Length: 259
Length: 339
Image 1 (cartoon, rainbow over the protein chains, first blue to last red):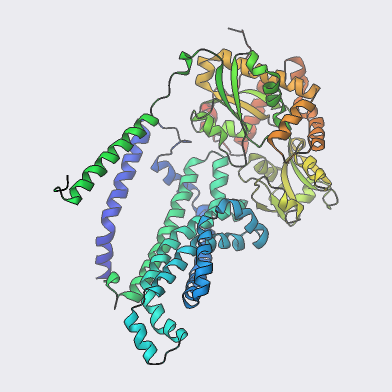
Image 2: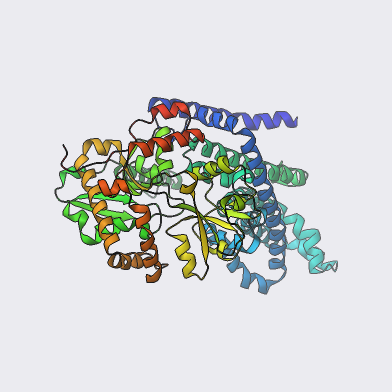
């Protein structure tokens, strides 16, 4: 049943992607576009196969940093959102500043992250976390602020404190909103990791995807650049899919959005 | 229009707005006016491949002395940075000339880019690895076998060269972004450098250093190579020749008297102090001049040097043998008035 549902959802976009790839291949050949400008999908596939082990290892490293950063932003985001909702003064004072996280140009602070956290996983995960934090905070806060007042009243009548109300009513109520934030954060975490790797990733044998991209750019190996980008996008889809699946599992029994 | 439903009104106005935007896009992205129609100096965009520094002294000198103007050229020198894709910008027509690394020129030609070298500012490769003076590495082999981080731009062929000569290194590579901070903070034990640049900068930051010249290991490509598109060379050979001769003249002027040009560089790049610029300029003649330049002019290139370099690139696997045969014309020494 689940397999049939997944297939029904998956085949239309797959057909579109396949069609787009065919058009791309034909266009590159027909217009004789040079490889360094726009490689054809077949060349990109060849680069993926030739460089397979190295690209897979690089994807693994980026995935680790992305996962760690995303986990961090999920936990910190929910906690921060909860604190902001429980402490009105904090919300009025801090929330506008949290928007700064959205504004900070990551490329500018990435070197600082390397100096503070060190090369490799620590600074890259920090980069992924910073970029993906705000959507989770916003989703959590929004959900907690939207709790049905009638239900809150019931909890108050029965003598539940604010923390108890938050735990038993607020959090479950805000799950759909939190998951919206997490979905957005998933894609951003991958971007944050890749950009962090431009300045803080190891080179050579231990290179993650971001470092593979900069190195391939310097060598004019454009098919490899596109192959790495495809894998990074795949990573984003995977994380997004995991978040979606988790959301469906948690919400399907009782929330309209998951039916 | 008040009796027309809101939805229809919105749909119509959305369509009109979209049509206007598309029209604007088409006009904006359409072909530019033919530059040859307007009389006057030929405007040229020259993309440099790093921030303003003495390594481009000849260019700034030509600009300052009016060397470009005298030859009917209106040159804009565009500063570069750490990851600017200069060769690709040139091949794609975004700029008219670009300073590139010799390796980038070769790999770009191998992948279909039609750019040609016309001037080589550095006759001896200034590529070096810099370490602190008090560090325990007496030779490059010592450094190569050491533990620690090495700040170097991944993907540069000299690293592959060193790995072939010295074997795999125990050093861990981290990205080179142009900032000396990790070296100053002792986060990294070594970093890539131009022998004429970083050591001087480090000295003014109070850090004594030593360099290992890559050229001493046998890998000695031209550097600060000026390249143009093949089609420009075919269609406007005089413009290219004039550009090159202006740059060579600028270099002579800079090496003879660096002070005025250094002042200009200091304006453009406040990271430099006058003392640093003076020191850097004093190191340049050893790299910019050679027997070839004495016989012809600064920037003159030879078949022998380019052939050796292409052989090395093939040996390192940077280009495959099929690409090697497709390389074609890699360099020219344009001379004004030769046609």
